[in-house]
Length: 234
Length: 248
Image: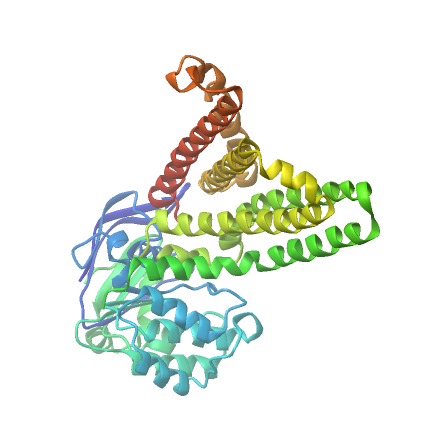
């Protein structure tokens, strides 16, 4: 369980999160949707322990994010791997820090994503790098999986592969998966819950299936509606 | 399954060790070729000139780790790899400590390579003089103490470099300028706070029965101790900023 209790975060004069209260339960995939600058990445970074809240409290499995880093698999939006690393070196590096690394899952996803271990990060395409990044987080059996804009700048075919890998990589059970994106179509069918956020405020929270049935609209259409009409809470 | 802290440290250390490979190779090759060339091009007393390239390369071996100290940490931000580093389940002490260990390795390896190559060339050129020097234990101890003090001095510089960089990263604007000011500021402060080791030792019982030579060595060692204490203080400050203030 991840809890945000009245959390606020600003960067200079820009308010990234404004008194956010929300919970992310285990065993569910939650999509965090919103336009650019809405505060999606800030939520993810606070959970990953690389940002600190100005006020309020973030709890990850009952502890502070800083103390729970070994339980969190975090995929940032930007390329964060050393350009001189081969995929094998990157995997070995991760293995050295995370006891939940699953070598058989790594091998399975390596083959599924059609990646080679000798690929050098700085010499492969953006799509391949995105797949490598995803592989490195999905190969872990972490209780919390955070994916920040996993489709950013990726072509449609690779997006489908990544979405498929997410389904294969999802471990169910108690694993909580948070996917932050503004490209809602790609993961519409994947998410159990949705959080719509704009200007640092939660606009709508709910069960994806329930929302679709109630409004007889896709999540993408609901998102447009929410951001057009402003704050709504379920 | 728990992962050992030692394995984590070794992994971080090995990753950064890659950064200094080329520099060490350059120093080693330069030492062999420059000192070797001087050795074979000179004869008899003229070989004293070997001291010139040895001193130059020793300076290089001291300067390069200082430059690396800025690159090693700053590069994490430039390559965005800071996102990975900060999400790792390791403390700031381990993160900065592994980088400190790499810089320490670079300094030791670089200076020892130059000293060994230069020393070998000088010993074979002036065997009698070296026998004379080797017979005076005081000289050997003085050299060892000087080297020890240089190590503590370098540790202080590396820690100051870390401290200045993490301080600079607290600001979005003029980060480089702030780092530079902090770097200079710590040195000025350290120089002002550093007591005169001779004065401190003058009244010490350590000095009363000591010969002039031993007084020199003890003064040096005390200076090294101050360096070490200052390095520990500055390193602790850098770790505190890293753990409590740095965010992305």
